[in-house]
Structure formats: structure tokens, C-alpha cells
Length: 278
Image (cartoon, rainbow, N blue to C red; front, side):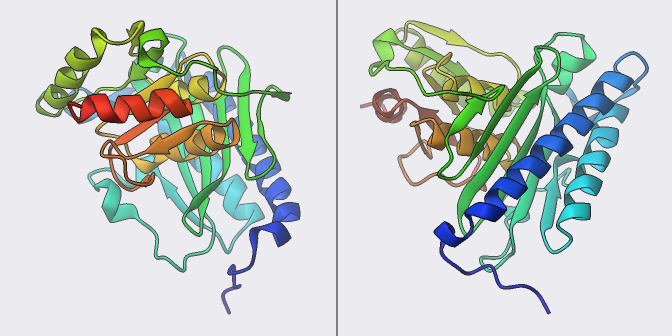
């Protein structure tokens, strides 16, 4: 019989620590696979300019085995098992048990070109909330971690979003999809924001961009074409670091919608307004 998970979050804290510990272990094992494959992987295109490597699959397998080995009643959604599906198509049922949502290699193009901006991203989604988030950057040796009610951390030290409250003072980040036609909407958004923000960045990794928001390095992030494995871990980090998230039209954050605005409370709200042309 399936275990019931419908109980108050405050009775769940002991297990949250267990989940976080498992996610950190899985992220370290996944990152070790990435580094082991770095000099010998082969590359394929999932779609035009959208790359996948042997390393993606090796990392996802060890992450999946680790998490489901510890929690066999949980669900698992990994990027490499979900090719061709829209964000909404992978949404778990409302009564689903905790669901691990994993990008085993976020920033594949960077990885392929030996640009040291990529990571393993592991989030745990349950009862409509990102309750655990772990993002591990193996090249910078930076481990971002968070669990609901327990704060957000970088290598064990507490982190918070920045104190920047206006777009005029903000460094914003974004991401572009591989498909050129889908890039056009975000190019319009870039044009709207480039004259308003202090500076804009595109680093090629959604998960790391969100981790940087949580750590106060970036002040905001927006994009129109995310997938849940891109954003669930980062959402947990940003919420625990005092930031805010929503859809681009200001509705509550939903990782199974492709659009997202995240940032400090003031910057996030202003970006939503600016994207709407207000």
C-alpha cells in the first residue's frame, strides 16, 4: 500500500533533513560522473543545437539509483527520460508522493566546450512546493543547498538574496532555448530590459543562474522556456534565501509552466511589470 504523505510540514522536518542529505550525496555522485566523462564523452543532438552527452546519462543514472535506492516510494523525473515532453506533460498527480526532479547536467553546451559553467540540479517537489534543492557546480566546488524552513546555504554557509530593490541597480540573468524561433520572444524581452537594468547576463545554465540569485550574485532571473528539472532546485534555494518567484504574468510559481521570473522581492515584481510593458 502506498504511504500517505498528506500531513503537516512541521511533522516532516526530520525527513526533510534526510532528503537533503540524500540529495547532496546524489549530487556529488552525479558530479563525479560528469568529471569522469569530461575527457571522453560523445555528443549527440536531441534536437537542432540541443546537445546530450554520455555524461548526462551516466550522471542521471547514478542520481536516480541513489535517490530511489533510499526512497523507493518516491517518484523520479529526469531530463534524459523526458525528451520531447512539454513541462505540463511531466506534471505528477496532485496526490503523488515526493517527486525528485533532476537535471543531471544543466549547461550541456558549456560542458561540451569545456566552459566551466554547468552543474547537477536536484529538486524535491511535494504537495505543490519545492521542499529540497541542491545544485552542485563541480568546477567551482560550490554546493548550494536548501530545505523548507531550514534556510539556504553555499558550502555550508548561509546565503540570502541581495538587497537590491530596483531593476536600475540590478544584474539580471536569463536563458535562451536552443530553438531559434522560441528565442525571439526572449530577444524582445532582452531589448525591453537592457535599457532598464544595470546589466544583463546569459551564462548558459538556468540552475546556476537561480543559485546565483539565491546567493545574491544576480538580482533577478527571467525566462520563457524552462523545464521543471531546470528550476525546482533553484526555486527551493531562492525561497529559502528570501527571494520571490512567479510566472511572467505574475501568477504563483509553477515549475510545470515554462515561464518564470525570480529575484529579490522588489526586482522580481518590477521585472514582471516591465515584461508586461507597464
